[in-house]
Image (cartoon, rainbow, N blue to C red; front, side, top):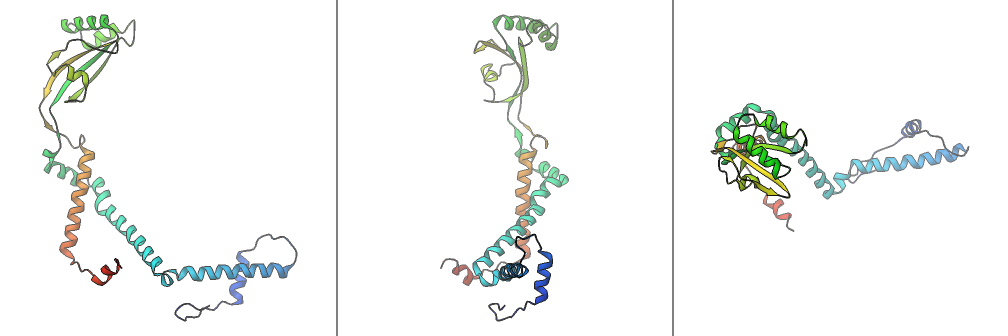
Length: 245
C-alpha cells in the first residue's frame, strides 16, 4: 500500500493470521474457504481504513487545521483552568487579599432591619399589636400563645431589606417602630422596624460569588499581561490574509 508521498507499506500473511486469531467469531456455514475469504475481505477493509485514518491530516488540510484547532482549544482550556478558574477557587489566600484590597467595591446598600408579622385576620393583628406594645413578653412567647388555637394565626419573617426589596417594609416607610396595619388578600401585616443600617462593606462570605468572578478576571488580565511582557507577538500577514481569500 502506497501513500501520497510514495512510501510503500507492506502487509504479510502473518499480519492476516494475527488478525484472524483476534477476530474469531461464530459464523454460519461450514465452508472454511468462504469463511477465510470473508475474513480476508474484512481484514482488507480494516487495514485500508486504518491506513487512511493515520494519514487523514496529511491528505486533507482542512481536517488537519480542524484537529489542530481542536487540540489548541483543549490546551488553552486546560491552561486557563489552571491559571484562572480553578486557581481563583483554590487560592483562598489570594482571594482574601483581593477582597481586602477591593472591599469598597462590595457594599450593602442602606438597609432596613425589620420583622414582618403576617396575621390571619384583623382580630389576631390587634391582639398581636397590643401584646407587642406592652413588651411584657418576648415576641416568641406572644406568637406561641396566639398560635395555640390556630398554628398559622401568626407567622414571622426577619431580615435586612434594601429599598424596594419587600413591599411591606416599603409600606412601613422605614419608620422605626411598629407599623400600621397593612392589609392584603384578607391578611394583615405588621412591620416592626428595628433599625436603619448605613451602607457597609460585605464580608467575603457575603460577596464570595461576585468576588470570585472578579478575582478570575483579575488573574486572567495579570496572566495575559505577563505573557505579553515575556513574549513578542509576530503576525504572519501571509497566513492572515489567506483567511479572507
